[in-house]
Length: 428
Length: 169
Image 1 (cartoon, chains in turn orange, yellow):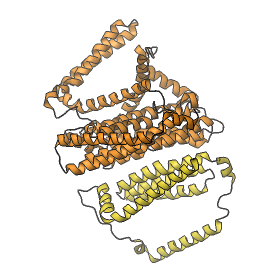
Image 2 (cartoon, chains in turn green, yellow):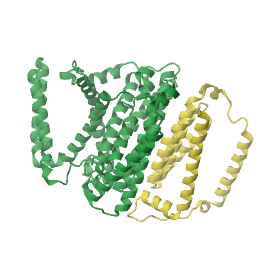
Image 3 (cartoon, one colour):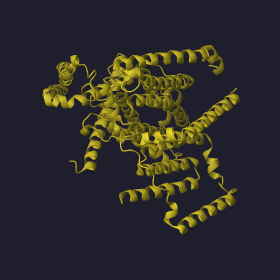
Image 4 (cartoon, one colour):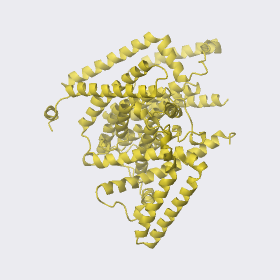
């Protein structure tokens, strides 16, 4: 296999692409289901048991729908814009490390972090050009909002990433995880403020609630993709969900220790290593429980088969050799899914920001916080010197983060106009 | 051999998209071609093992500055701009510039390959990657120019904010 590096890379890329497409398709279903449960509804129930085949039906529908190009549209730009969005979102996954072994890493760039920032910032072109090329009012306004929002929130996100870079001392994503492994502390514990900033900026950059102003349906119909239909709309949809998975994977790699088990250095928690087979068994149990209550025979047997399949898989995973092998990929996936769930959770929880509130959060709060965090991190690292103790570094960083948060809150809060003044100014 | 052919492809793409930038009537199309140019120049950086420069080229120029260009261009009336004849007033200056550039190039070709030689770049230490090497040069050898440049940029930024604010109030 060593003789064909390109072939191996191509195979890995195809696998990642297929898995990712599956995750994205089921992410849509999961979002509809979770939102439904949070609102005491059932969500999709028609296609397959609990609507499990809904993604396939949706995909087929979008493929077969007519692809409309508006009469006044700039045809070439209109056609290419959604492709830019999707390509930018998928390309970044080439540098994400899924595990420590070289089989689980497509490529380890020594400027990996910069590559991530560079390529993910290209997705904005899909949105701007798509909105402009539609030659229609709502898409143009949506894409203008989007451009302003993405440019604003890229700055705090970038600065939060620089904090991680200072702590881990490398731009390679593999080395960043390895640094967290050797220091025994996830970057989350050294950069809690940085994580918070990155998370908020990530939600804003993926145009998700509560930052989904570019597609605020009550104001802009559907924002930048109003004129898109059929498969091109599906591409935009895919790009949005792929970038959700992307920022979750990035947050996991940068702050949550990538493929590492939680508290990997604590021997008392070694029983967590048994979680992969146990969780598969639990899935089997839950599916079997619901299968018994399902009235449709075909669906019932399908669910029983799924339950039996997961039980068998649990047995395979329980073999010690396999269990060690699946550890990294299991923990990576589990953490990414936890963050993806949080994305859906935000959507059910937070109301959308108004435009001035969005700009306020970005420029008045996140950027000063990120700047302060950067300076404080650099100062603490300089004070602690090379190879500081784990606890010393943790407490010093915690104190610095708290100090930055308090100082910025005082400074910004003091200078911020009151709600009454804003209302007077905006006339709302 | 491979590197050379990749370079040739990138150079041809960079130059032809550069020509497209100035010949398109629609400013948005010009911006798209300019992005293609910047990308291929980034590729040439990568070919020279300057990964840091490549990444910064994409982040700053493609991801930042061109987005702002588009932002501004989208707000002007593209139809009226497309109907105007560009460079009709500056053609004399343009011709002069082209003549000067052509003379320089001819002189370079006349003196031979040696005149293009810029001196061999010093190789960075093996244990140091590209980013660290750039940082070392910037912050050890050229500390003062970097600080002056960043101060200038800061002043420009504050000035722009101040001007915008004055007009707003």
